[in-house]
Length: 294
Image (tube, rainbow, N blue to C red):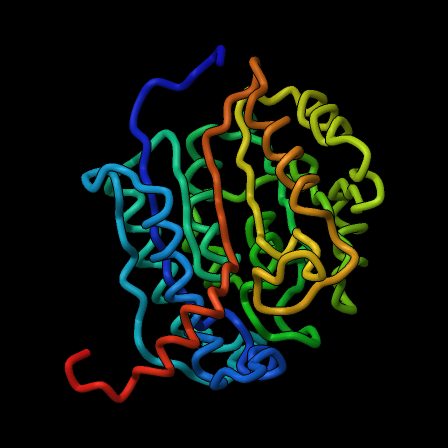
């Protein structure tokens, strides 16, 4: 890969769970306990870090607070989210990496990592947000989970106190929403107003070329790829919290990831993998939870 950045790579394991709305999580418990599903966001990044092993001295695990609160200023568990954001931002700044891989947790775990890279590369950085949801809600909308506000805050829209914690935001013109098809009431208007480029699943089924063309057209030499596991149609694999049908297939998502990751003139400097809920693991935790030896 040409124009490769020399310097430090960092892995961020960020097991944040509070950014998902309590009521939203309760809709998808199934046979699992309500709290198990929400706390699945703690288990997911641990598993991802295990199956994609990295060097221990290049990994930081963000200490996530243990408490949970109600809605404050339009955000579920706002004080916990703010404290977690500060912890993640500080640890990333201490390491000052040139490249970051982030395992979550909910989608908002991407915010401190991308904000750090935005400050480092300024207008030479683009973002591909591969997700069934646009994550462009703002506080005061019909959904209070901060994970659905992640991209809004990264583009400078949202809670002022949270925004002050970010070293830099990114211009919406250098953001692509790919595979997005499930919207909250306020999000579509926000995406239109902020002029964020959108490619629906149907525009990407036959080929990932539209994503590659957009990336090249930005003129940036570096980019971040954010992948929410619910970009894969839940009818094929239910990997995330909610069941989102009508999305891309696993092979289509893999084709997009491969196409952009192997570009010769544009370097991948950030990768986020988020929203993985390992239901079978949560089930076995519930089965043996009363065993004193554990």
